Image (cartoon, rainbow, N blue to C red; front, side):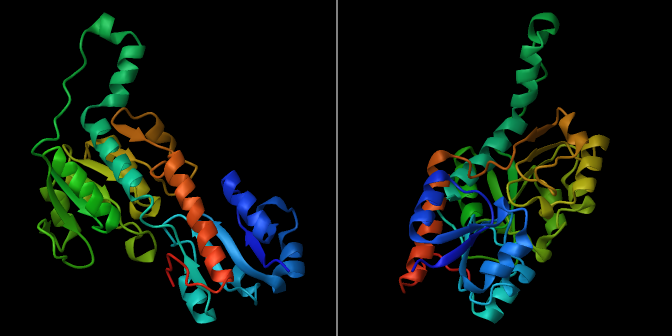
Length: 312
């Protein structure tokens, strides 16, 4: 008899096909009667397939007394109640490492796009202004610029290595000092005041909620650029909009937002902002590899093998 699992949202076709072949899949997102589904199937559900946005709440897990594993498509697990999972002995897995390269590349792309005003210049050309008004204002080089990385984990280190190729100087802030050659700042505001670019690539969750606040953005200053490829919760979105509007902050490159997929209207009209619809890991290759890990972790668990990428 196939194990029964709960799918929180749609996944890549090859993932859904593999899960349908191996399990009895209950698609929570497809039913109009979620309470009815959970009441009927909840006692038999042994696994959850979810993603970093949908997660798995304590309330949901409490309705699944046979739950053994939550397999998350994504590296961020702040939407999964890890404390509840730990108390109930539920294994939680995610999909780290396979997305490092592409997320780091997105951070670098946003650094280049903001410094070279790529989007604004594209619009400038399309509007015929190159012909009518002449060349646009000069952009800025990133060679010799100082970049502060908020969260020097796997992806943060990858970003640092890539930006060093462009001649950037790297410093960082995190929970503790690491055995690396980059200068460490134990105070985020102090680091912001010392750098040209601040890149957020720290985990989401209560510990980092709004950590990039008005004081940090003001310290970064009118010549500074804020890049966020972490979570929208990491920056105070109202403070960010205000700083960009007032000129207290120079530019921003954002791949994540506080209430995705909603984006503040004010950001949509700014030419000193480059926006992306949460596409850090958004390549065919990386998303397929992430999906494969979801499949593999569930398979390993239900065949009695150690899961490949445990969080808890």
